[in-house]
Length: 154
Image 1 (cartoon, rainbow, N blue to C red):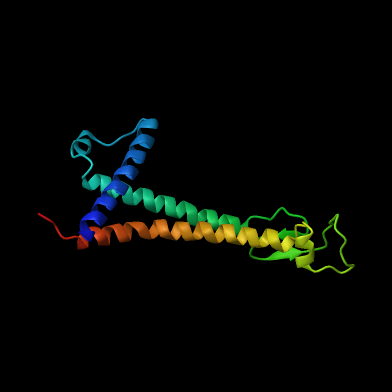
Image 2 (cartoon, helix red, strand yellow; image 1 turned 90 degrees about the vertical axis):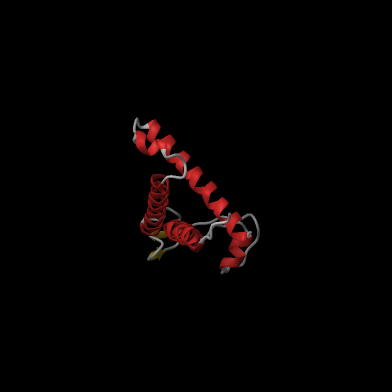
């Protein structure tokens, strides 16, 4: 019973990706040949296009993660990128009374944005993009294994 629901879920996912790919191809004046179109949604061509779309999206996400890590951070008090930030003095103003040598936690509580927060945010964004990219890159392998290991139900 579980294999049947997994197979149905995979078929729905591939059908949605196929529809998106066909919409993009139609928008650019391209499309598949009549032979492949006649084979319907269960065609090998559709599965190949699904894999290509997933791999392409995964590659774009991994490249985006690399760009996020290497792009300069435009925040006060920090220069460089998320891999090797260079911290320097930054100006701040708070309405709350603070001690002369306030800690970063006290500054954050007063509403001041410290440079370390900008770097940490950029690193989290890059990690999320890389995680999505790796998941998309591994999806064709998982889909192929699930399809190979499914048992026909009659």
